[in-house]
Length: 179
Image (cartoon, rainbow, N blue to C red; front, side, top):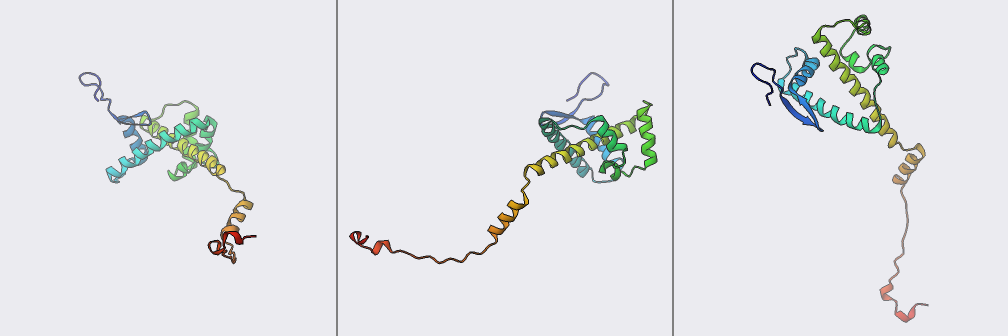
């Protein structure tokens, strides 16, 4: 829906995921951060971003319910630490560039608005990835099976049992003949 009078910005809501509205401009910024000037199929790009929003909304809801979060220090470590997030590695950031960005952020210096939007989206991706890892860790521990139980289960499912049975023909025994 359009908002404002003549010449104002359009406030278009693309949809809602889990009660969280998705603004067209936010969607475009996310798409630009993910794909930049990629020549990938537009439908594929938009579908990928929409799925990202859906996953984020669900992940945030579950994480909040479980009290999971990513602290500022943890986020800084995932971006600039010795073992960065896979997203930093995937985006092929060089250590020298990361050091410069870290100094800029820590000194509160002005950053190019386009780069700032990109970096903010990348931070969101890193946070989501970290929350997903934590949530997966909780789930995998919750369904952990001790080795002794797994071995016992395997053994009972894979052991052949030979047995013989005897059929007692109760229908052929006279009622007064049972002692």
